[in-house]
Image 1 (cartoon, rainbow, N blue to C red):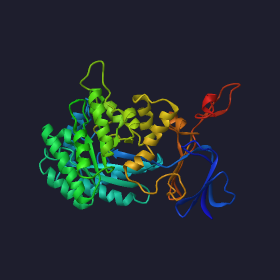
Image 2: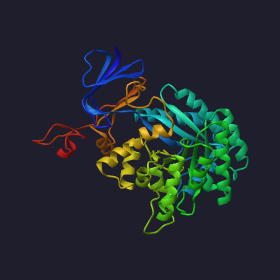
Image 3: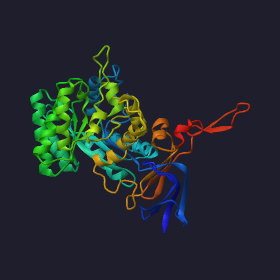
Image 4: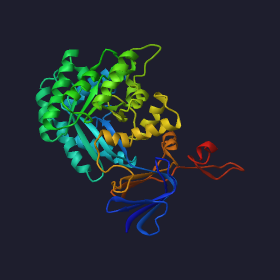
Length: 432
């Protein structure tokens, strides 16, 4: 009956000791005990089994380009933008494809099987679009890669910005992007939001805009994005990424803004690692850290998902393709350390991100795709604390990556010879 059975699995919702049966690439059964054999069996041994991680905000055209053509000495967003402007004319399709494929290899080992990448369309050569469309096809058997036409230098500000974005969409890039706060004036920014939402409505496409990635509390393009979303009937199909200016806005204005965003069903994508690294650079002390109001947005019912954004590129010299690292940082910056908080954070890198990306068949229910990961952790709180190894990564019922458990050996008189660095020392309250 089953091609694969994962036995004695704990699920993200708190259920424990379940067997998961897989047939023809889909989850066929979830039960306390599946009393039949299968072609392959994995003993989860009381560890967490989750749907794979999803990254709804990434820049695959820039990934792994750290040091090209030089390092970002100041570490600022503006120097990163300038560096990318120096590198962009030197980009070749072959180099872009090679770097992207290497990143996708890393992503699979981390259990990251769904990625939405912005594709810079500011260079009218559109070599970035050509390369990532090729990558999308190459990785399709193991990663679902969504692409956003992103006018990185501004839809109106960049020469040929308007025509280049249209051409990228004609080539097959399926999501409309924007960056209104980078236009030359606030008026041009608002005008770009309207134009890009109109394009999305006419073409039947989703929208995902870099919006208000600044410390300036008067950068309020998210208000315009929400209003244009309602105007064009795009509710639920629009994402506002970053929204870091909300960190600095006065609370009275935010009390008006969040209900407008909820009416428009905006998907919110903070990027914790990048936001706290790049924001507040002009502050002395107190120093702002720039992540948007995650707790308040979640409380208002908005769908909040977290992106990795960058890995070893002109903007961010760190990163590992591990969405648990993103969630781990979000816990600290959003000050969401409660048990229920951590479950919401885990949702923000799994089910919430899947909703943002409009994924079909994602999840841990019978009939869902058998895309699964087995982690060296007992539950979601432990996973976020430890960022543990992904013991098995499964795509359509087939193991596509495996990592050995992390075990520490000890050479101490009277002490154990080895410990599972996750579970052998946790307090009893966490063992329930």
